[in-house]
Length: 476
Ligand SMILES: [Zn+2]
Image (cartoon, rainbow, N blue to C red; front, side):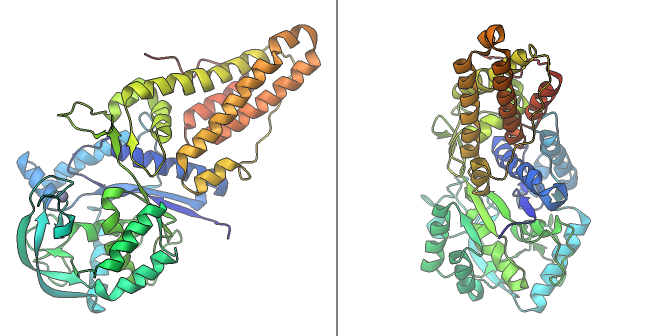
């Protein structure tokens, strides 16, 4: 079936710290897919949502530490995110930026909780477990490594509290069916298998959806001494970000999401609690949960102590907006862990952008300056291409590879035809060769648009005006 709309989301980012390279990576990937879909389906049929997750114990504590009110604290972090997504930095074109402290979001979450409570999907009970304040989550014993949370390297505290729980056991077999049939597709395949084997070997415990000692959260409407567990609050952004008010019978035209993009650290909760809420409400699940890996440097997790930290500002100041977008998206198989070093990225920048693409554009434009008749490139057919197939399958790096094979072919075409010699002896052949090259360059610009929007525009302008300034300079 041909799709007629596209809705993609990033996870909403937790506002306990400033944005880092991992946030940039996920968001650029979603921006590429959104821009590409806008090319195919038109702006009005695409919705790209990002935003911030602003409640919970961890933020409450962080704000206290620096002597700020939580709202004041998160407002500052949010402005850092918005600044990073601006045109001057990563050039992210989102349709809405949702904040979980927005009053409309809060109202909708309360309405959902009331509905779930009235339906009997939520009940009052007690929960005892090992709580990691890093994750804001109770952990299972088998998720711990040497008794510690592997993501935070801290020993979780034993906690017991009165709370509200959401039924999980009752939806488990339904969830398994939806994952197996790809009605709720978990991609890449390895993550689907991981989740299925987990769900088949273990009965899901009912999950605590309220907190008694966390004031920085959304009050539970039927028992305001409790606030909403931050994950439950956060998941609903994928609906409230479209303007949904919490009425389970009326949902927005963009629903269901075509892709919920996430990092692998948040796969488990996204593949269990999130669909459970929707199943209880009787709302369609997202079509795809796409999981990507983490960013490493030199094969290791980035850290200050190892000295292998790469900041997004460092990348932006060295490679510029489009260079950074290109290097993040071409650095490895999208979905797997990505291993970046400044050295390798610099090499790749010089080879692919300064020499490959930059050289092609400047050669073609210089050569057509010698032809007095103008040549009109026409629009290429994007839909039929191998590149669109790759993007449909979220193989972002492969799509770029395919574009670069066109860049190489076009550079080779120049070498083979030697237009500078043709200019002296065969002007009609010269015109033919250059027309073809211009057409190819126009097509390459079209393909590049979702990845490197400014560069694509510059190439098109250069083809029109026959003037060019170097796109990418070699760097050290
Ligand atoms: Zn943790």
